[in-house]
Amino acid sequence: MRLIFFSGLRPLNRSGIMRDAIAGVTLAAMNIPQVLGYTRIAGTPAITGLYTALLPLLMFAIFGSSRHLVVAADSATAAIFSSGLSGMAPQASVKYMTLVCMVALITAALLLLARIFKLGFLADFLSRTVLVGFLTGVGFQIIIAMLGEISGIPVNTHKTIEQLQQVVDGLRQVNFPTLVISALVISSILGCRHFLPKLPIPLIVVMAGIGASYTYHFSDYGIAVIGPVPGGLPSLNFPAVSWDELLKLVPIALSCFVIIIAQSAATSRVFAVRHHERVDEDADILGLAAANTAAALSGAFVVNGSPTQTAMADLAGARSQMAQLVFAGIVLLVLLFFTGPLQYLPRSVLAGIVFTIAIGLIDFKSLRDIRSESPGEFNLAIITAVVVALVGLEQGILLAVTLSLLRHVQHSYRPHTMVLTPDNSGRWLPISALPGIETEPGLVVYRFGADLFYANDNRFADEVRALIEHAPTPVRWFIVDAGAMTDIDYSAARSLLDLCVDLKRYGVTLVFGRVNTYLRADMNRHGITSAIGDEFIFSTLHEAIAVRQQANT
Image (tube, rainbow, N blue to C red; front, side):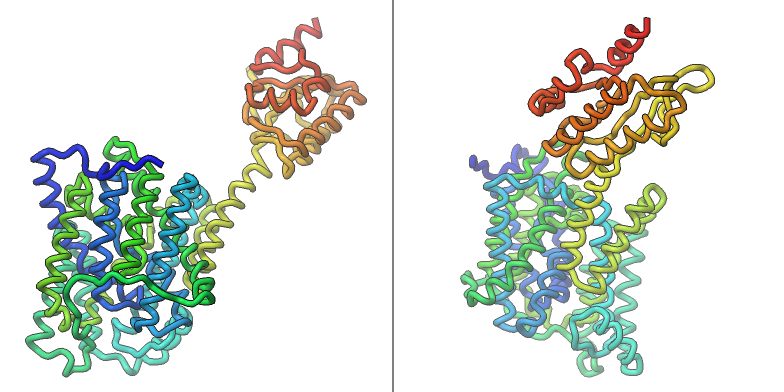
């Protein structure tokens, strides 16, 4: 495994350094309030949000390859482990933080294994459709979780349905000053996001909230504030848990691992393509492993390649990891000198920021596009979203992976099949392969749109037999357009050999056209070439049709 350090920074030049330094300052202004807000999702002390943007950012800059990916706290992974750990220890407690750090360490180990065995391709097993559905479900789950703090209604459960029920039951307990502050924060952020996207409005509302809380003593009006926030650098510690606890944490870490692989790979690809660059996915996985190791040892929580923060960095003009290093430098200054004022920050301000983050996770445009282009995939996205929001994130991850794989298997199990038929001008056009369809009297040219394997070989054989048995005239030539086939497994080969025997009994000559090198090798190995006859297997469809015409002349 060859290591290349700081590939996300090089090459550097003076103008690029200045541009990225300015972008880093802007990124810090926009993201520091957000990483504080993510701690409300994670159930950790506010200071841990700043920790996620310190050593983890540095580690990814050293080991990663993407020039654009911002690795820090992320709402999806924070929601996953907070949901999984909610029953194991009280949130923000010492025990809870130990478990949180161990989840990050196990996630780092899984990422390291993925790098060693070059498992970056696993990202491809989460389709964009179910990923949109998953993030939509996460968004709704977070929105419901924030309703209590936005309104000042006490909520003491971590289950989404119960949270919603407690908010509804406690409507008479709404703290109106808290609700007003939340409404101002949410409306300001959403309004500026639309009309003034470059304005660091989250930072402005945080500073305004701290100033107003300090001046007018918000806590005297029942408005909850963060309270004292310890400053200084994080201490490095190894999280120690029992063997039983470790086993319970593995599924949680595995869920985080899947989302990190999928989101980070997709995000780095998008921005690499946008800027005409190449990205080494395996190097990024190593960078993510190093970042999560740093998070675990420095008292932070799982970090991820964040799509929203990466988009913010790109909008700010960042073109290398130098901007992220400047971001980390500013976080360092905040930790050393400016944590004192954070104690006056109203919790409703952070809840409002998180609420707007959750709204951003719901990709209405993509959902609308999926619905108009592929209603079946839209249903999969909605099912995933509902399971994530109402059942749980880990179950949602499992369902997302399962649905993605089933979607792929469904395409292979029920591929598009067609028969070439003549139109009024005599040209051959493809139509659905239905019994009773023929190409010409005595001829059927048939296309099967997938590889032949154990799950669809009977479908192939049954459809061939049905086309022959129901043809208007006796079929003497059956030509298979194998352009979509690259592989035949053992089970499919047995079925095809049985079909060859049946077709010979019916007096039908079987011909294969558009057979590529790989398919031809499989046909030779399984004895299919011998059964059909080498003279009836061709690399083009034109040759396959020509052999029938020559036989009839």
